[in-house]
Image 1: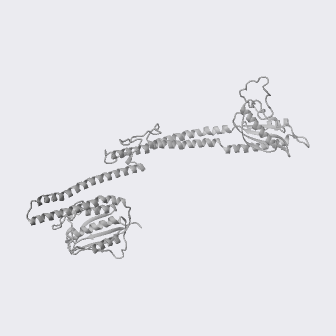
Image 2 (image 1 turned 30 degrees about the vertical axis):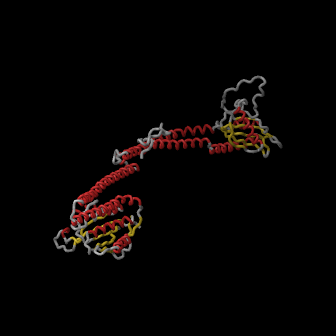
Image 3 (image 1 turned 90 degrees about the vertical axis):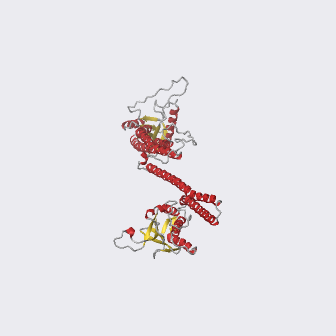
Length: 546
């Protein structure tokens, strides 16, 4: 059935969709949205992971710690004076900090034992820091810059960010003055993230000062990684959009065409789905298209068969009804008892024929439904044939042909996959057909065999045989060809047709042939060798896999 969005019908109006602004059908829009959602999650995850690069922060902390411990050791060894109470020579320590070049991306600060800033790598480098000056102060506004922990003009006490940065730096230095190494992230003056380590400069156990190393390039590295990731993101977006459009064209559009074709079939504007360019595709949609075509063709053939069956039924019923009407109209005009008896016999025969026709037509009409309703199960043909033949033998009447069953020695079971009731009906139809052509003292022989993985059932009679030109016609519906003297109306002509229909549904075959007596002479043609000894119906079924 077609989708509600793209295929409209009188009894099923289209509904506005949430994503109508996207091109294509509902399935195509779903493909596009799902691709974009997955891509958005991927991009968001990549950006979030870049924001929280713990590995980068830890690596910077390790690097700064190694450098800081080395610098602290050098300053302790070279700039410590005084015995027994050691002190740090601030001027000499500043010179050492100036001689040991630091990367431009890092900043080193040196504090004395009181927490006062005595050296800053920015003071002794050629780095020029600039920023907009704060508003001018008026007299009485309070104290000026606090240079104890400030770095000069970069710390603006009037700025909230600067105050937070100064407080964080003060807490970090105070922690180190207690002899504890400090390492982590803190907020800088401009609100940027700063990786900082503070290492106490100790001489034995005395803390002479604090060396602080900080790196402000974390945001720059993350921004650079984002910029490097941007081309890949753009390529991924382009590929996702192209794949979505391609899937829309290759999947959603053909499915929509199939849905429209199915709607045309449903609305009786076509007898079969036909989408040639899709059927030629070597993929699942091609398989679906071919399967739908085969299905609709099969349904069309079934409809034609039903129409032919209805026409045949009407024709077959019309004949006895016409005979009945004529007999009834004539019955009132006939006064001779013998003539009235003949008319009554005609009426009885026509009623019997109608009864047989109605019964067989009912069985034939229910056959397809019964075959499709029940699942196939393993069936033992030897047991089934034995049961059916035993029933005929138990209910046989005087003057009726006998029914026998034979099977080769050692053939205990022959298993097939099918429906036991339907196969039993095949056997009954073939046996009834053979008995109707047999003499009262004749014998109907049923045999079971096996050949090349197939089960063979043969039903033989001793009747007059089948004309060669009618070996296939006898399986057509309502076809009857009986010798003179056969009871009128005793057969509807549906038994063999029903038997073939059941066998075909079980992936088997059924054929008819004539048996001949072995009286051939050299030079005779095969079809002329011997007299006809009767008819043989052979059923071939595939054996069930064990």
